[in-house]
Image 1 (cartoon, helix red, strand yellow):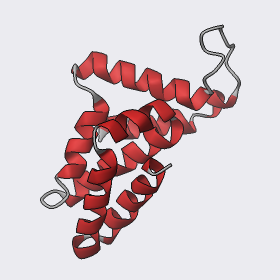
Image 2 (image 1 turned 180 degrees about the vertical axis):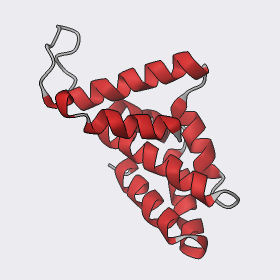
Image 3 (image 1 turned 120 degrees about the vertical axis):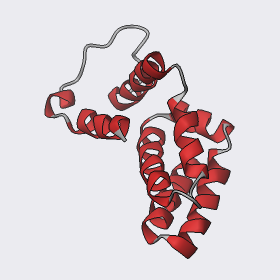
Length: 126
């Protein structure tokens, strides 16, 4: 939850709109993709766990913890929308299947879960 809130602050920070100076290794990445990669790197250095794997575990617990799954799905949607590398990694971790399953659970149990995981599924289908 803290990382999700931190991510939202970073993505809405006004001074971030200024174009950063690009180096030769960063020229092919857009600013939001660079931010996601840095976020992924920093979160791993703090927790020693892959944040995408952790968030997917929460989405997979949708049946017992719908609120947590909804928040994790929201974070994953933001990360995967902003970075093709995060999207590809999430797909490799069976994220599309997890999002689809959580969306189905949401249809029965929780409309917000259904909406969030439906949005995540759409992002991962790209």
